[in-house]
Length: 278
Image (cartoon, rainbow, N blue to C red; front, side, top):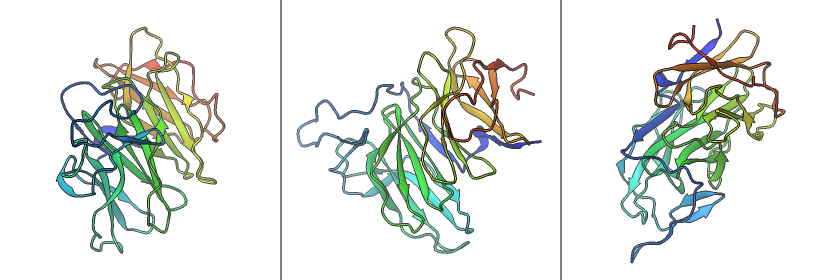
C-alpha cells in the first residue's frame, strides 16, 4: 500500500467556491478600463492586484482552509471580500495559532493579489524549511506567495504557471515522504494533458514545469488530479477524471522525480476500468 490522497476529500488542502460561467484562460492582465472612481488593477509578477483595497475583511468567499504545521500548530487561510476593493474581487487572508491547540491570532491579508473571477480557489502548504506557501486562482492562472519560517511579511505575489483550460480545476499539492513538494494541474498545452512542478526539500526552489503525459484520445481534457498515491518505491501514481465525462485516467512515474526536469512521466495516460482505477 502507498501513501494516498484523494483530492475530493482533501478539505485541508484546497477550497473552492465556483460561480456560473467559465474561468478566464488568458494570463493575468490589468483591467482594460475602470469605471469612474475605480482604480485599475496593477500587475505584480504576472498576478493582478488591487492597490486601492485597504484590507478590510467584510464577507467570506470561502470557508477556512486549515494547514497543519510540523510543530503541532495549525494555520488557516480564507478568502474574504473587501468593501474597499476597487475591482470587486476578494483576497487571501491568513491567521496562525500561537501554540498547538491555542487561540488563533488576527486575520491578516496575504497581499493585494486578487482572487478569481468566477471561482475562489486557494491552497497552501508548509515547506521543508518551515515556511508557508500559498497559491490562488487569478484570471485562469495561479499566483504564489511565500512566508518565511519566522512568519512576518509575505512575498509579492508571482505567477506560478501551470495554466489549465477553463473549468479544468485548480492546483493540487502533494508532499512526498522525503519532504519534496509537487504541484500538479491539468494543462491547456497541446502536447500534454497535465503538468507538474517540483520543489526539493534541500533547496526550496520550484523547478520548471514537467509534462505529465498526454491522453491518447483526441479532444479529451483532464480535470485536476483526483488522487495522488506515493508507492512503496517512491513513485507517484496519479488519477484524474475527464473534465466533462465520467471516465477516469491514470499515470505512474517512471522513477521518483529528483528535481531535474524531463523524463519522469510516461508519454501517455491509461484509461481506468473503474473510478478508483484499481
